[in-house]
Length: 117
Image (tube, rainbow, N blue to C red; front, top):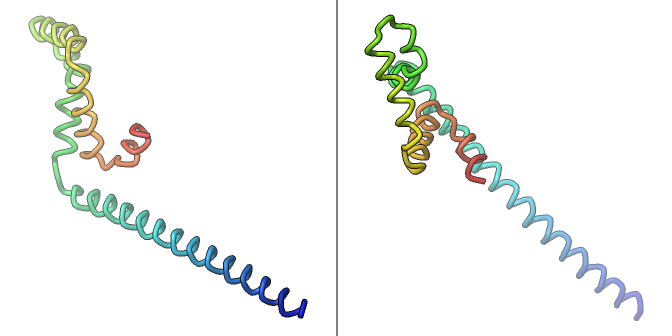
């Protein structure tokens, strides 16, 4: 009789542990599929932009305040100085939108996830 009780308890514990393992394995497989989908999306986005000028355009336009000073023009230098002064008054929401544009253009979504967390 005691053997039957022990066997019943053992089979209950074994069933519970197998159920936990199965749920854990299913959860891990689901997470792996999600990571693969994100990686595939990022890889495809970068592949599609291979022949695009949008990256170069954004890089040139948004770095102009730095390299614009090498152009020998007094008027340009004064305007760039004004631009730098005005950047202090730009609302923070614009910087968030700007950062999102840069992150998405250059395929850096992983950076956005780290910033948001």
